[in-house]
Length: 214
Image (cartoon, rainbow, N blue to C red; front, side, top):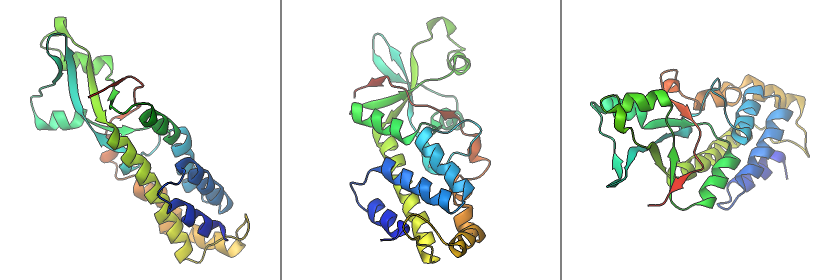
């Protein structure tokens, strides 16, 4: 079985190991000398940095809540919908292994912190009573990121297959490498799924290990 056929078979399995298919995709992209795709897969395995393009599928939305000692978790009220949308939307930069570990260790909701500067902005009208405030994300949002990674790898592998790039044993021919690097939708796949500059302005953040059950 060819390298690409083997990847397609594994990624189409509903119970596939996403870390395993990421590693196989890393090998394939390296062998084909597709530097951008190789960078994308390494980011998924190791986590993104603030300087990297974050794929659109890593954008999540949550609810901003603060903990009131008398009433429990309460929703934060904003002056405008624009402000609420801005602060409640994040791009997750954590690695897929960390995402998997986090959702498997807890069945509740996942929290994300805010910087001290943003917290001061939230509580500027009542700084003396600043309460514990978090962005709360449902675990299904993180599960969706994992599923989208599988889908993007599947689509990428199908593009290779459609162009006749299959691989033999663990290598690709010179012709296959030339086709891969001269086909924009294959070579620029990472750039295409990362979205536009405007969306890149969304805050980037890591998931908290602290979680609260519903």
